Amino acid sequence: MSEPIRNKKADFPVAPTPQNTPANNAPISSHAQQPGIASIKEESLDHAAAASLFARNPGLVSMIQGKLGSLVGRSSGYIESLPAPVRRRVAGLKGIQKDHAKLEAQFQEEVLELEKKYFAKFTPLYQRRASIVNGTAEPTDNEVNAGQGDEEEEVDVKGDEESKKEDSAESSIDGIPEFWLSAIKNQISLAEMVTERDQEALKYLTDIRMEYLDRPGFRLIFEFAENTFFTNKTISKTYYYKEENGYGGDFIYDHAEGTKIDWKADKDLTVRVESKKQRNKNTKQTRVVKITVPAESFFNFFSPPQPPTDDDDTVTTDIEERLELDYQLGEDIKEKLIPRAIDWFTGEALQFEELGDEMDPDEFEGEDDEDDEDDDEEDDEGKSDQDVDDDSDEEDGTSKPKKEAAECKQS
Image 1: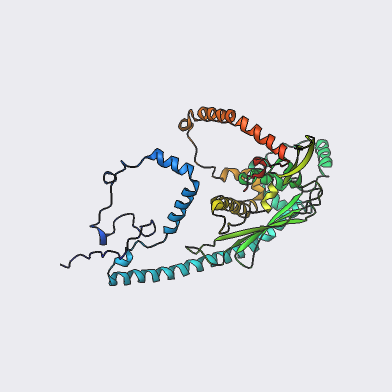
Image 2: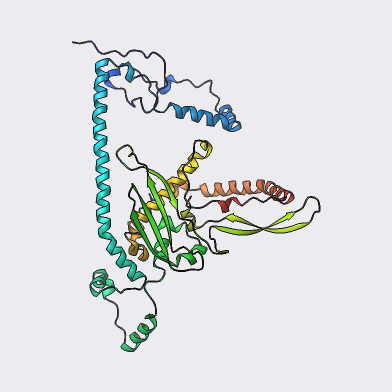
C-alpha cells in the first residue's frame, strides 16, 4: 500500500481567497482541519469600538476594501505545493477547459447568427405592423380573423343607422393613436421612466425598431412624427459589447451611446427651470434668478451612464449599478417590447411577466410604524440644518440643484 501524498509547505504565506480555496476539504488534503466556531476566539474584539473607528474613518474602510480586492485571484500556494505529477494533471485539465471555452464562444457566435437570420424574417412583420399603426394600411380579413378571440367574435350587432353614424365618426381616425406610448406605459421597467411631461412628446412616437451591428451589439431606433419638442426624426441608442467573449463564451456589455436630442426652445424635458432668490452681501438687495436643474425624464435614456475610469474608485459601485440597469432597459426593449408590442398595448403581456416573489405581509408587520417614527424624528432634527443651508445659498449668491431633481429613475 502506497503512502499518502503529503502537502509541502509553501515557501511564503499567502492569504487564501474564495477563488483558490476549496469550500470542502479535497481528498488530497483530508488530513487538514478547518477552523470551527469553537476554535475562534473573539474576546479581544470590541465590536462597538470597531464600528466607531470605521464610522470616523471612511478612508480606512476604502483602503481595507482595496486590499481585499487585491487578494482576489492570488494563489494561496495550494496548487504550487502539489507534487509535480499532480500539477501536470491539473495543467492538462486547464488545457481541456480552454478547448471547452473555444466551443462555448463558437456556440454563442452561431446563436447570434441564428438570431440575425430570424430577425431578417421578423422585419417584414414589423414593417407591416408599423404601416397599420400609423394608418398607411389596413389589416386584411385573414389578419383580423387570426387575431380575433372568441369573445371578440360575439360582439352584439347594432342597427344599420347607428353603425353608419359610428363608422362616419371613426373614419377620420388614422391607425392606432398613441400605440407606442400605451405599450411603453404597460411595460413595467419602462413605465417608471415616463413622466407626465414625457407623455405629450411620446404621443408622436410612430415606431421603435432594432438593428444588429456589424460588430457584437445592437441599436434601438425611435421614430417620431413632426412635433413641438425636438427636430429629430429618429433618436437612437446603440449598445456595444466587448470584442472578447466572457467566461462561458457570453458577450460582455461594454457601453452605450445615445443620439443628441435637438430640443426646441424651452422644450427640453430633461431639465426644468426654477426661480431662486439671491441676496447681495453688500447691498442686501434681493433678486430672483432662474436656474436650470436636471429633471426626471424618459429621454434621459438617450444619455447613458459611462463606464468608470481608474480615478473613479469612490463611485464605481454606483456607476456599475446604473450601467447594469441601463443595459437591462435596452434588453427589455429589444427582447420584450419590440417583438410583442401589441401584447403590451393591450396589456396581455403583463400576465407573463415575473413580478417577483410574493411577500408575506405578516413578515413586515409593525415595520412601517417604526420607519414612520424614524422618518419623523429625522425630519424634526433636519429642519434647522436645512434652513441654514438655504440661507447660506442666498447669502453667497450660489445655488445648488435639488438632489431629487438630479436623480433619474433609469440611472
